[in-house]
Image (cartoon, rainbow, N blue to C red):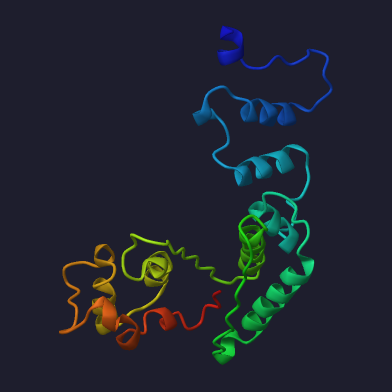
Length: 206
């Protein structure tokens, strides 16, 4: 048991594997986490150097593989419709296109979340900013489903003092004491007074 936990894996003395590759394998299997490669990218570079190979180019398929958990099966017609909508949004982003709303409905367990997750992956691969909100039936704060997406937008958007002040009434922990809400600002006036959501003008989002 001690050997399994602490000793390095044995290397056959008559192995014809290049020493540089052996070192990479040993580092990958090091029992001490701090002695392993810090991330997959560093390990890949070391592996390519040890085998005298060039780093593979990062294609869309490779980027997509980082995000996917399992192969998507079924719902191809629905996925094609939604993917086309994302493509249209990406193509027209520079023209200020507002996009289009889509409603995905169905009974519990039919695959709505899996379908949207697959769409999210494809949109992210195309460079879109994907924002995700979730509503609850009861006990939620006002604008509950918008609070998480707004946090992402606030971090990536240049807000005016007025916009920041109005958003502070909704997400006070996102702003410092120097941000002051305009007189009369409240969550009930949020949508009519704030351009916070639409200020992410040059990033296609869905």
